[in-house]
Each structure stands twice: as structure tokens, then as C-alpha cells.
Amino acid sequence: MIALIRTLLRKELLDASRDKRSVMAGLYYAIGTPVLMCLLFAVLLQQLSSNDELYIHIDNAEAGPALVQYLANRDILHGDESKARAIRLSLADNFEQQMQQGRPATVILDADHSDDRLLSSIRRIERALGRYNSEVAQLRLMARGIDPALMQPVAVQIHDQATPDSRGGMFLGIATLTIILTLFYAAMNLAIDTSAGERERNSLTLLLSQPLLSWQLVIAKVLAITSFSMLGLVVILLVSKFAYGLVPWEQLGFTIRLNADFMVFTLLIGLPLALLSASLQVLVSFLAKSFKEAQTYVTMVLFIPLTLSMVTTYNIATDYVQWLPIAAQQQAMIEYLKGSALPLPQLLVSTLLTLLLVVVFSYGSSRLLKSEKVVFGL
Amino acid sequence: MLKVTDLYKKIGDVQALNGLSFQAENGTITGLLGPNGAGKTTCLRTLFGLLQADRGQAEIDGMDIARQPLQARKQLGLFPDPFGLYERLTPREYLEFFAGINGMATADAREATAQVLQVLQMDDIADRRCQGFSQGQRMKVALAQSIVHQPTNIVLDEPTRGLDVMSTRVLRELLLRLKQQGHCVLFSSHVMQEVAALCDQVVVMAKGRVLAQGTPAELCASTGKNNLEEAFIALIGTDEGIAA
Image 1 (cartoon, rainbow over the protein chains, first blue to last red):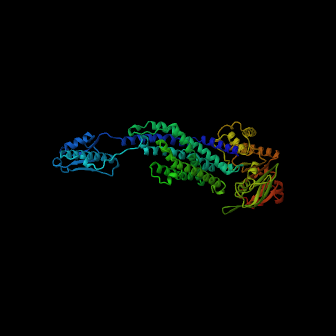
Image 2: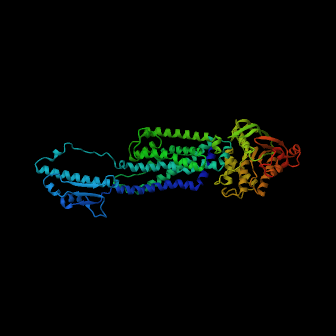
């Protein structure tokens, strides 16, 4: 029986490995995604850490030279139309006068707060204005012989426990998302080809006329597709290691380092997922009546792992979701990269769940192969 | 030996098999002759256990296909319609694979494959991928596949369709050789000529049941006609769906 499955597996591997287009389509994903992400991260990092000069419109600057100088010291400057962002700071005409009299002097900050690209600049100006406020207030109090500490009833001390590596939450999420989804996308074409394709080419009926049981056939197919998923995983890990090494992480004070330990860990927790991916795609392909229908269905079904992975990436997983396949594995990868404690109970439960689903899906496929309707595509 | 007894099978609304019974002996070439839609392919698929009969049974060397599918199938070689080749494999890989899943150890499978490649004079195409093969070359691969594991029974579904003269001759010679070696050969066809030329026994079927069975001469005698074609038309009552 082992010999029979080995013979079937050898044929599946040989046949699939010669399907160059399908193999390459899978590998394009594994090679291309980290490179794209690397570029995306570089752009994002630049945006997040851009503490360069900020040009805005400052109207009536001559009314408050001290304030304008204060802002300029913090690289917030007046720029002309071409340079300045769509933020306008207007000083009231009586600004200087009000300041001298110790009354509130009006400054109008005019900008579209719903524009996400402006938001960090607006916050930066607000912070600078806030600090100017408190500095001037402290001076006024001292001039009147009052201890400025009175103005600070609570001394808030913030101890940031974030380590450099734990800061890159979103980046880690996206990096692990692309890695884990490889298991589902790398062998998609092969999975469809070996099931719906085999039926369409009429070799399925011939195979089922041979002295073998349908579950043996399903196991061989699932194992073959799993091998290609794992190949995709190895490729994306290697490419990611190289690509993420090029991202200028230092700007944000954390790095994504994919060391050998992490790769071995990912391969280990990825193996059950690869089996899940293979058995799911084979089942869906057999359920479809034709090759094209299988492509549509498989693409649709792959939204499920995508959703589970997205939920983990953006850290919006509910307590239940954290125990589910894909989500738990991805969370474990993220924690591993952060150097935090692994969510072992979740990982264990979800791995068992994953394997249970593999059995259920494979059993489903072998049941389908006993159905005349499915085999003959009736 | 192949034997079907009182087979009934309904596919959708069509009663494809309607009490079909016949027997094909070892050392004999039996032709299953019937017009298009007579139930020939359904009959063969049931014989292989791909379809389950609603009633009746199909036996291979005395083994019921429904009860002992694995043992029974080891004694069956199938030449299917369509062939079901793997385009990306070479004939040698294809044949070794089928020998393997029929229980042959790797070394035995390799030897059996080499042998059958030689018998069918396929050495020149043995290591080329099937992609791009001519119809004749494809037929040879399918034929080799059906005999590589040396089954006692060989079943061919419409084997001569689309073949040129040379390929038909290769097929015919092989079937005669299998017969001499004592194999049971059953093939379905709607081509009168090849049935008349090859078969020792003819089973005439239409609408899912057997109308007559016997040697070509017996069929002619029983219908009072002087050739098989006339006898056949007399038996099924129409010449619809028959190629001369």
C-alpha cells in the first residue's frame, strides 16, 4: 500500500514539475511578493519618519515674529504655493498686542482634517503650538513670582516597554501575511490541474479503473501539492530574508530579521497549513464541474485564509479567531519575530484543528471520487 | 473470463443497461457490437466498477467487481476512449507508472515496460513526451498501458476510431497475439468491418440489452443473411448509428 502511494506520488510530482507554467506562476508569487513589500515598506517608512522641513502657509507672520521663529526652529516654515502643504496658519492682527497684555492671542489653523496625508503634519503643528503655549505660560508665571510647577498637578511619566523589534507591528503583520499566503497561492494552479485538470483530460477515469482506492489517490495528490507549497514557502523565506534586509529599518528603530531559526520554525508550523491548503483546493476543484469553474471556486475559497490572515495582520482578531488555523500560526510567527512568548496553547489547538480539517477535506475528496456524477462531470 | 449477468443501470432518465447478460471466454476475441447509444461504454464502465449497476453483477475471472474491486481490476487491462494519456510524461514513464499501480515492484515494472515497448515497436518514441504524438502513436501508448501489467482480460473501448491503416494493423496483430496467448479480449465497436475481421464471438446489443450472441457465421445463419452487416440490421431493425 505504501508502495502504491509512493508510485502515485512519484507520478504526481513528475507530472506537476513538468507543468512549468503552473510551477513558475507559484514561484512568481513567492519571489515577487517580498520584493514588492520591500518597496512598499521603504516608501511607508519614509513617510512615517519624515521629520524634515514642513512648509505651510503662514499668514500675517509679522504679527508674531517670536512664534514664527519658534516654529522655524522646529522646521515648520512658511513656503510659497508650489512648496507648501495645504495647511494655513493665520495670526490675528492684534496678535502682538494681545500677547503683550497677557491675553489669549488668536492663531487659526486651517486644514482639511479628513485628509490622511495631512494628518501627521497637522499633529506636528499642534504639538509645536502646544509646547509654545506652555513655555510662554511658564515664563509669565515666573515673572509674577509663581512656581510654574503649580500648573502641573500630575507628573505623567511614560515608560515605553516597546523593544525596537516589537514596534514594527504592522510591518511584521504584512511580512508574515505574504509568507503564510504563499502556502495557498504557490500551488494553486497545480492543485487545480491535478484534480479538475486530470478529470478534463480523461485520465481520472482511467486511474480510478486501476486497482487502487480513491483515498490513496487523494493522499498522493495532496502530498504532491503540499511539496510544491512548501517549496514556495522556502523560496519566499529566502527571498524575504534578502529583500527585507534592504529596507532602511533603522529610521524607525526596529528591524525584521528572518534568521535561520525563524525559517525552521515557519517551515514546521507551515507544514500542516500546506496540507490544509492542498486538501482544500483539491476538494474544491473536484466539486467544480470544469477546469474553469475550479479556478473560479478556488480563487473564491482562498478569501477565507486571506481574511484570517488580514485579521491577524491588523490585530483585530477576536479571542475566538486567535485559536483558528492560519490566524494562530501567523500570530506565532509575529511573536517569534518580536522575540515575545509564543501563544503555545493557541498554536497547538489550531495545528490540531488544521490537521483535522486536512482529514475532513481529504475524506471529502475521496468520497467525491466514488460519485459517478463527480468522476464523469455529469 | 468476463461475465455480466442481468445488468441494469439507469443514467439520468435513460435506461442505459436493461438486463444485459453475456460472457467473454479466454482465448477468444469477443466483439461488443451495437449502434451509438446502445450502452456499450456504460457496460464497460460497469465492468470496471466505475459505475455501479442498479442490479445484476459483473465478474472478472469469477470475481465480482463490486465485492473485490482491487483483485478483480488487477486482472483487467483497459484501453479507454478517450485514451487519458499524461501529456507531460514519456511512454516509458507512463507505462512504468501503470505497471506500478497494478502491484509490480519497480524493477519488474521497468522490465515489463521495456518488453511491451519492444512488442509494439515503440522504442523510437519511448522517451519522448506524449505531447504532440500522432493519433497512431497515442493509440500505441494506450494499448501498451492496457497490457503492461499482463492481465488475463483486456477490454478495449472503440479501439480503431481515428486510426490509419498501419495503426489498425498493429492493433489487429496484437489482439490476435493476445488471443493466441490465451487472453480474454473484449472490444466494443460500431464498425462492422473490424468486428467481422477479428471476432470469434459477436455480442450484438441495442438499447441496453443483448439481441444475439454467436460467431459471425452463426449470426448470419440465424437471420438468414449472407453477411454480418445485413444480419446486424436484421437484428436491430435499423441501420442507424452503424458504420460499414
